[in-house]
Image (tube, rainbow, N blue to C red; front, side, top):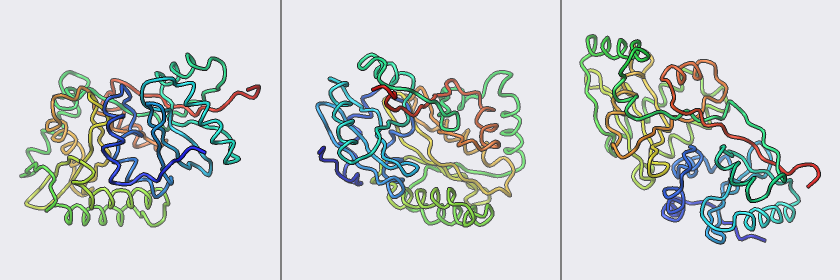
Length: 298
C-alpha cells in the first residue's frame, strides 16, 4: 500500500518544490487550491521515485492527479493502478492536460482513454494583455476602465493581513446577495475562500483591494502555479459598483510580477455568464483537461 498522507498547510514547501519546477500551468496544482479545497476532496499526497502524486475523492470516486516530477512515469502509474486495486476502486486520473496526455501515451501507449470536459478547461491569458488592454479586441474593456475612473474616486491597495476582516465582510455580503446558502457549490467556494483568507500569509498568497470612497469595493488573490504562470483564484466585488470587476482585474494584472508570462484565471464550470466573461478577455490558451481511465481491454 502506498503511504499517502493528508495534505496539510505545513506541506507547502514539499508540494511546491515539484509544482514550481514543472511546466504545468493547470490551476489544480496551485498549493492554495489544493489546501483550501482539501475539506471537499480529502486530498492526500506522496512522493514516489522523483514524483509528487496527489490523491483525492471527486464526485464520489477515487482519483489521482497525473504525477508531477521526473523519472520513470510508467513505474509510478503502475504503482497507482495497484493502489486503486488494493482500495477496490477503479483507476482514474483527472485534470489531464494535453502535454500530460502525451507523456502518458509515450510511457504506456494505448492503455488509457481520455475524455475532455470543456467545463473544467482553464482560461490562461498573457499577463501583458490583461495589464495593457491594447488593441481593438480590448476596446470595450478600456471603455469600462475609463468610465470607472470618471465616476469613482478609487484606490488600489495590496492585500495584507489587516484587510482580511473587511474582505470577509464583502464575501459575506456577496454571498447574501447571490443566495449562496441555496447552492452547495457556492457554499463550498465560500468555505475555501474563508480558509484562504484566514491563512493568507502561510499559504503564500498575493492579493489586492479596490477601495471606493474609503470602502472595499472588490478584492482578489492568487499565487504562482509554476515559474511562468500566476493563478488568480478569487475575485469578488460589490455588485452595486458598476465596473468594479473590470477594475480589480485590470489593477491586479498590473501588480502581478513581470516574471510571470501567463495568468491562469481557472475554469468556468459550465456557467454561461462566467464563460462569456472569461472569453471576453481573449485567452491565449484554453487549457483542456481530461478524465483518464484504463481502456476496457487493459
